[in-house]
Amino acid sequence: QVQLVESGGGLAQAGGSLRLSCAASGRTFSRLSMGWFRQAPGKDREFVAAISWSGGLIYYTDSVKGRFTISRDNAKNTVYLQMNSLKPVDTAVYYCAADTSVTGTRDPAKYDYWGQGTQVTVSS
Image 1: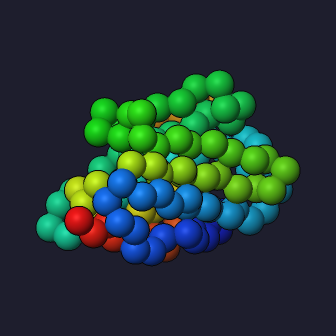
Image 2: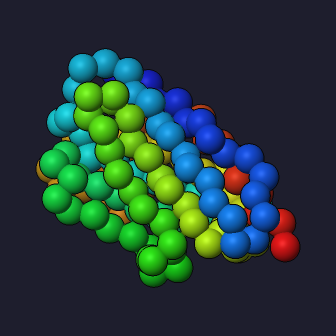
């Protein structure tokens, strides 16, 4: 079993930045692909970014390309989402997730573990 705990959410101004962190328990982090998803009120959960075990494969949803960066530090069992040039449309609860695939995936159904979520609110 893997526990995931997100942190770093909060309130930001449009154009500002936030850095989300997701700390994973256990000793299997280096063998987990990791992803970030978000869900705004009344909307479906949306894929944001994913990173493979090695970090060699990275995926982003089109709306965040060039603004968000996913990275991981296996020594710290942590995955990050650096969010720059934030827009009000980025407002959502952001969830960290982990799966056991090699490459990572955009499909939330493929993820085995989920964090509790952290709120990101971007004001105009």
